Length: 399
Image (tube, rainbow, N blue to C red):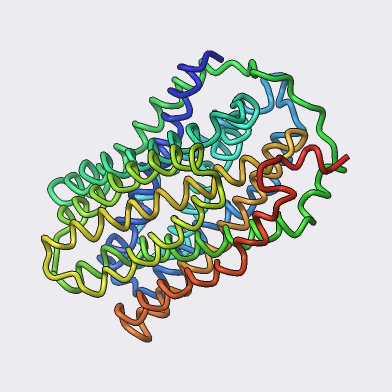
């Protein structure tokens, strides 16, 4: 694919991820609370929704190994995943989660499985076609596009949910997913470099302490920033009694922050290097979470949301680019999906635990704990960036 089309299709696919992320992080808790579901069960839904992203390990192996019906290693899985997401979005709002909690959870699981499938295949396509000197840029673009999806859809979804109906809001996401499905039909799997043959022996790289430390760092950062994202709007609603539409505005500003963080995170990683960028990401995350403790009023909350969004986008881009740099091209989607799956385990645990923390400790202590968890990255960073692998990929170390 031409460079310009690669950038467009990656952006579109991550944009619709952002549209679902907009609901999942900004509205899911409010939606469930409106049906009488408590915060502990909101956290359970978050855990169930993240489970498919743990299963990305197997989806990555599938995409690396199986040329589906001769259609390619990436494109068929992208199309199937987007289609599953679109169809699930049609049925989700037809279920009352207060009465049929587990049916809602099942539909959410199916929807997120579709997203995990096309997300994995998209990552594989990016790994197949992106030169090393563009890795930070492409990850910044993808994170930024997803955040743009959060920003645009938060405004759109919040307006529809508040002034028309939740059902129409969900179906609008199904329509957007359908549009991207037809755009994805134009994907051609012509890589900038020849795909290397899948090798099981390449998985030995996952046993290296540098990679293990990177995986733990991923679980930690993901635990922290996604937990804060889940409780941001419930916290603002609890403190300022905001409407669903205002919650959408907060999510939109948060998404704008992610766009900025993604852009600067990508450029920063390419310019500063991965090690320095991770240090900056950790510090920015720590500070941004503590700011929730001093939010003065509902207007000041917009600034807090923007700053936290920047921290979210910056940290995520830096981690993605670092993981991309350390994947072996023979198991590109598999290895990257494993690192992402471990990060998503952190997200799943965080979404489940944070609801319990809020119910038991309240919002202020929960924010303090989540901010302090950032400091656990301190012993991991030197292990991830030992001299031997700080500027090289793992490919040369495996054979």
